Image 1 (cartoon, rainbow, N blue to C red):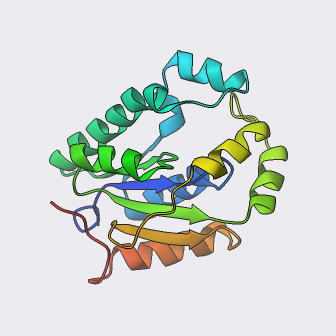
Image 2: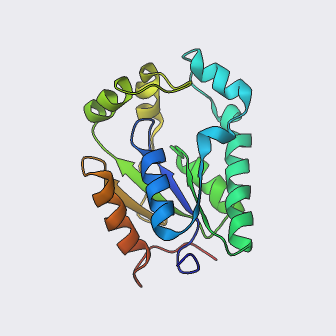
Image 3: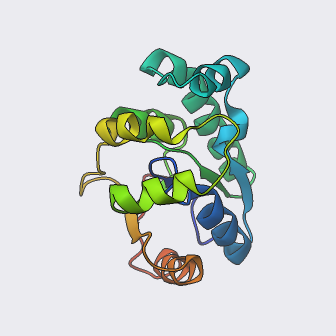
Amino acid sequence: MNQQVPPIVVMGVSGSGKTTIGQLLADRLEHEFIDGDSLHPKANKEKMAAGQSLDDADREPWLELIGTKLAQSYQRQAPLVIACSALKRSYRDLIRRLAPATVFIHLAGGPNLIRDRMTARSHEYMPASLLDSQLATLEVPDPDEPVLSADIADSPEEIVSQLAAKLTSPNAPRAAR
């Protein structure tokens, strides 16, 4: 199935379910999955653990690495799903410059639901206190971007079923190849 589906970035603010949905979707599509958090350099992780937001300069090398991994996997005809916040259009554009076939999946939900999820979990370096800065940074994808949106109020299984059907349909969003 992975020849029909492009490389995918599951995006959204922290606590939106990127890792859960990304892993389930990758399993369903028979893609490899990488949690983008694992690709952050140590300095970024330390900064976030200290409750400090990353700036664009902090994120740029991380986003370049994500774009490179997506492009390499696509060239090997082994598309991949990466969980990555990709909050700004410029971040998504940077990834698409390196991996033009990438399609984004935006996990969207209300701030209260996301905050509840964040406070109920333990995360190595992403405290719930950074949610407001993420929400302020988020630029909802524009209609001209290759993107599907999913409501995180649905169960992970429902979200993945809906996304897999959309991604494998003839009318699926497609980016440049």
